[in-house]
Length: 530
Image (cartoon, rainbow, N blue to C red; front, top):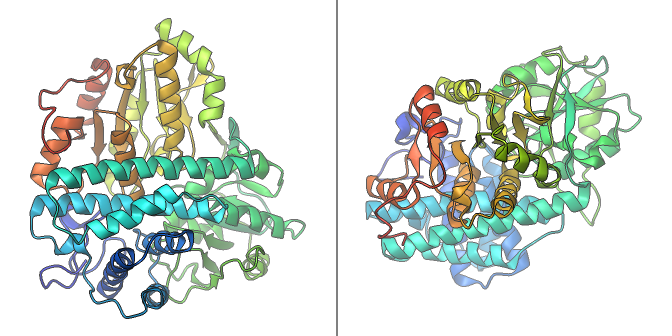
């Protein structure tokens, strides 16, 4: 984000330098030139939204283009230039501006809320893109994207922009629901599953990112080739779906969260396929065997083209490379358990209600979200390990890698850690919370024995936060730092109106989690977000 004459200025992710902004290069590895092209693309999309009525075709283009600007999605300038050229074609002219409206805003509070909405919108569009790849689209989501993009260039009061932020949350709920419907229609409802962490003896392909359709097509094309397929990072939840269980050469999960990929990919020995974010700077140790597809991109890395005329992608180059590789180097042994999306959890509903009423479950703690590089994220492992045996952790996203293998045991057969799946599967946690609210006869979901201790990293997490707030959830603890793009006034209003706050020490926060019952009441129910 070019700002005030600096080489670049980007603060859309949690790891932004000094929790203030990256100015010489991104903490993610993004170059200033790439950041400038991304800004230019966002500005072009604003002009397109102002000039055109939303259609399904334009909505798909906007969603995919904003996804290209997501942290750790695409670093290939040529791909961004292609999107810019298409925007110019759709406009019928070259876009007039290169600075997005949110970043041109001079009022610090208005800019803060505009950035909050823009980054949330990027997350919404990522989910909408994945759903569209499975044939599910929503005019409501596309209409909001166009409305928000147009609004960024207009002068609006903080109160009007606050309403836009909550509308972004509602669009996030719709996009996540759409993706949930698309995934379950295509692959079945996730169910409780043990996933192997063992490495096999055959050559393999390691699939990372989020795109389940890419994985399924790859599995179809690797059948009978002598090549095993492994999941990495956010692809772990593929093992929970019935459709993927039908492929015996889907061997297991290899490695951990996205920020571990440089070590994991080097040790894997085989071919690697990045299907979406989160790709990080590619190292020589695996440069000759990594491929990208979809929105993912890195300069010089071979890219598997998009589907054409209803045909699957052609993964033969990936498979051919894998067949010339050595088997993976073993990293771990044993198994991990997941698959607790809403259908599986609702099957447990009576058992859960009985356990709570009997005092066997004191608290549910939502520890969903993102993992990251910083050592400060060990906070989440320490919290998870310090929670007593009568607490149950609900999770989704890659934050689980901090504690999934450390917290053991169950409560009346209910595992202490219940993994719903990818970050978008926070939607499952919402559905479960609403069902438990009804089962206990509560009017307010905040009356449940439920606490939030969320880790965030990128813009999909911003979308999930806004979704929670739009649904009435309160008292979300967010870390390891509060977003750099929140001005002091905006952060204060979020705290007063919604109870959004930062983390403390693990011991202090565990005490707060266990002490808090139901909804914390705040006196300031007025102001921008009223």
